[in-house]
Image (cartoon, rainbow, N blue to C red; front, side):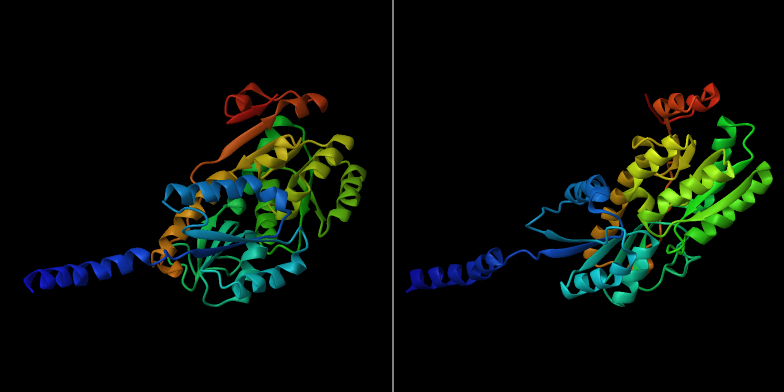
Length: 325
């Protein structure tokens, strides 16, 4: 009788533990919304996934991803964001201002982690950087503050530069503050700028023809997913028209552009992983400050410089973080 009581006691003690051990771990659904072509996000998403893996998340066991790509058709973003909401994702990671705006319109409750967004306060995505409020937070790219620096780089390479073409996608709300910053910098440098709006890849050729006709000495690009997707076409057109260039993203330089200055996608998507982790552990997005990049990278393509007949000043080369030869 006593042995039976001991056995019963052991069974009662171990039963909850066995039941608990059999409980499947919760699998979190992470949505990703990208306005650009899928190929643009291959490496950045590897950084996001690596960041989550370092934080202890195993794909298929703890997290699963749901990807949506607009392929440069921004009118598709609202529908793609709505699809992620119907998938019942637990958090949405989204690239750029147009993507974040679409995600915010699709849901008022699912946490949103924005990546590479210029001036999120100015375009109304968050209340402030320190206290975003609502259900959106993430990483800013401070492209607005870097627009002047990019013009200065062009002037350093081309001291006699007088006219610069500016490519902008007017469908991106962050293009306007970037343009204002560029205009102010141009005035201080004694440079005239001419704006060329590009809403669709088909408009790129006419924009470059316009720059050549205006006799622009170089061009700069307002940060936008479209210009990342079309990096090869832009590099080819710049080569054909013999136009030096400066970009926000190093990917454009790797494709054949002359220079870039700004943060890297790898850094920013890795930062996004930390936000996802905190949110899945219970943090409210509105209480998580928006982070700005702390490291900027200057990348120079010497092969392109040589093709354009340009000599990059040594003072610039020694400051470069990466040189493509």
